[in-house]
Image 1: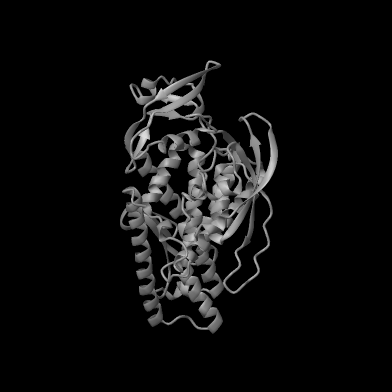
Image 2 (image 1 turned 135 degrees about the horizontal axis):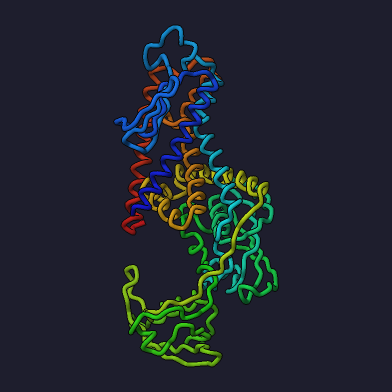
Length: 472
């Protein structure tokens, strides 16, 4: 819990400081007098004046602001009028407003670069047997297939009969994270995916039989795109040897005679391909709600041994399922993903751009009802993921920080009046018409923007609590 709180506070603190620092540096560059640089809102806990700017830390850490000299907010000394924000030319005002979100995007590039240079251990895309009758199974994926490359095919033709877009380039896949990313991107775009796979009999074995598979990801509605996308496509997870890893004392497996280290070859006479398939077969072995005896043929010390286990029915996430009370499966294969200085930086630029555009696409689809509002996350979910990533190590936390930094930059560029993007829309109107938005309309738009932001925050908090309570 303490780790979660600290990681969350560091996340918010870093991202807010960088965002406001962008505004601050742009204002200084345009010779605008900055009166206050605040991290947080409300009661001031700490302050220090450097030069003409007061730097403060306030009680509520969920944001910050840069207060500049402005005739619309109070009296300005005529001698300093030329340094007021509202007196600056339109391009300079737009630059100062845009500098905050741009600082977050630049930070994301630097953080992603650090992750690429340091390297991160991720799960290898060496797949277990897909679930029967799933999209992955229909595509021809088999146990021990390793995905080595993907290609996003053209988006589905629209209702007006538009031509499908051209297929994308083949892109190498090195981890399950890569695979999840490309499937998510394809599902949001309504595209299908082609896979290049090779068969690998063991983690160190050479590959054989490269094949191309076509997976109709477009059948998954954008409204159903979430963290469980791979499961919805039929992927049962990474490949794991069907080993008995550990036994619960006096559980059905131990009482039946299974031993740690046994390699399961068949279950009730049917070949076992991997640990995922074995677990699924055990879960589906009940008949009319009653557990059935299971015959395991295992390899033990080079010898074949038959073991009969009587499962017990247990409550698992609201369902009564057969359990043998044993840990099944070897650890998944791990690969270290690392890149050199130039490639690491260029990949960071691409990653930042891809995450930003995908975020905008998802927001757009949520706005028109084509994507679920369950994808909105609030501070509780952010804190949870901050804590989890920090526990995994600094590289994982830096990657998480980069993701949130992109999200913050994109969010602030949305054309809502209370956000930086809303102010940029005002300046666009002023640039086109030659006159600023009237005070009357500014007030109306501000109220509307506050209402929309409150609605978004309420939905995000609702989703947070729903996830916390297991309803999402």
